[in-house]
Amino acid sequence: MKKVLRLLLSLMFYGLTGIGISLTIKAGIGISSFNSLNVALAWVLHFKVGMVTIMLNGLFLMAYMLLSNFRHPIKYVSQAVAVICLGGVIDLFTAKILGSLLVQGYPMQLLIFVLGTCIAGAFTGMVLNLEVMAFPIESACALLAEKTGVAFHRIRYGVDILSVAGSVLLSLIFSLPLFVREGTIISLFLLTAAISLTKKVHEKSHAVKRFNRG
Image (cartoon, rainbow, N blue to C red; front, side, top):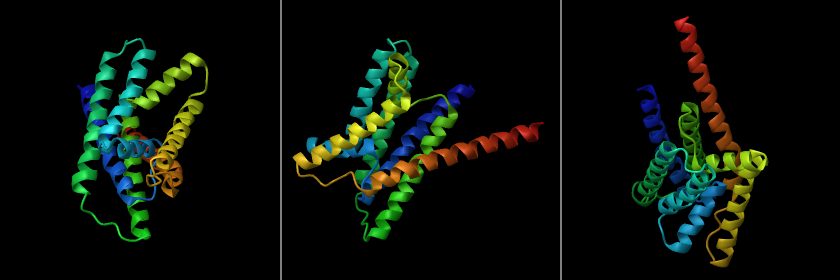
């Protein structure tokens, strides 16, 4: 029962990271590496960002399924549901809830970006803390690292580099706005900090609970 509850909470937190991502998109000062590719592709294909997010995460999920020889059906289903929820939340907020929001002035753009990054980082941290669900990108990269012997962080950074390069290339080819900007650099540090802080708070709360029980 506890595992089911943790899985449901993970799905909820996973989807809610879409709120933070939507805010960073709305800020208009650049977005995280992988999301910059999602947004650029959405402009080129005339799709909603959430739909492209589902598609690209779906590719990593399929890669994970192939690399793991289809041995973990429950994981595949849970990740697929989570990705669909994430894309749905992104589209809901970018197109409807935040669609009419006017962001005036760079300080306000920066504030919204920081808020969005912190929200995305906090919910991502909660997903990781619950330890019942991994993100498709991380799952595929971890398994690829295991099979090839290449360090996980090298493969994961490689995905980020390719995402940034792809986003910039699409912007140049199709004369799109540049989605790789200062926000992309800020997110490298702030997102990690938000995830780490959430992890520390979670661990501290568990330590306090164990102490009280003792």
